[in-house]
Length: 187
Image (cartoon, rainbow, N blue to C red; front, side):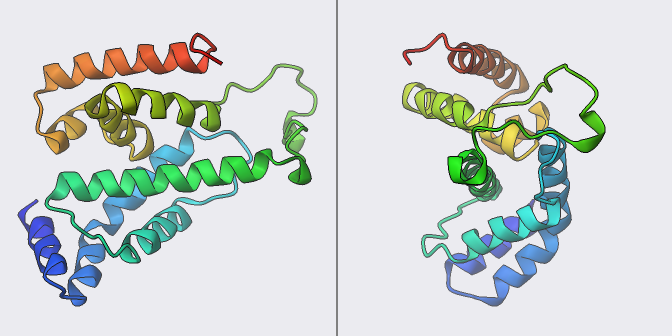
């Protein structure tokens, strides 16, 4: 953890080589997080973990604000970048011009009539925006868990809260988001 913080400090001071060294240190961890996130995506998703990490890194590296004070802020920024990429792709796929009014079906699934259980990223994004307005700390926990793929223990350490507090926040956030996504909120 201190190595990452050291590189973040160097980067904040303008050392452009620190970005390369930081990427070398965190790349495998970010790729594992991206793979875990994409494993939860709907079948037929064309984005690969490596591409998600690279696209997120390009966004982060191009960000002039780079005010990541610690591992927490850095991984929060990574989770946010990955979330935005996935939301943009979901919006892109949903466009009528791109066949957004049609259901995607994998060829091997043609015989079955059961709908596939998937997460509606656009509805989740709207619900997450409401949660952010109500309680930013709980929303940050959701971003780290859902979009960065961190475990509850990893997220609690990253946020600097106890595992018990993280567990309570997670239970509340899940109930809130489930209620909003399932149509319980004002729509």
